[in-house]
Image (cartoon, rainbow, N blue to C red; front, side):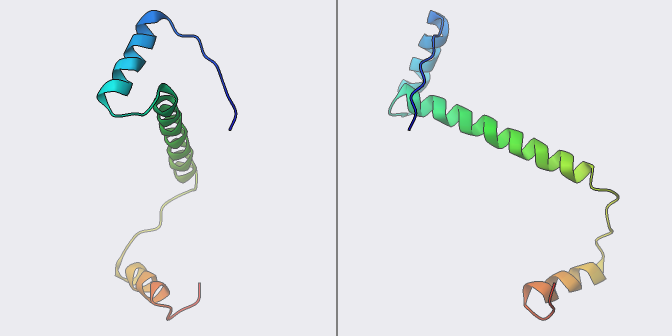
Length: 79
């Protein structure tokens, strides 16, 4: 695991320390890792949403579409 040092103004350091104390994080590093993971997840979701938006017109979901999905899920048809 790599090490990274950051400098924070006193008010942000105090904020982080309060979060660590009140949310049962074992350390400031754990808290910051959690924030970074959340930001990464938000970015990944945003990319997926934009890819969906740009994928073209949507196909209607009707009874036939659901029947094909059920058949595919049960192994009755090959995809």
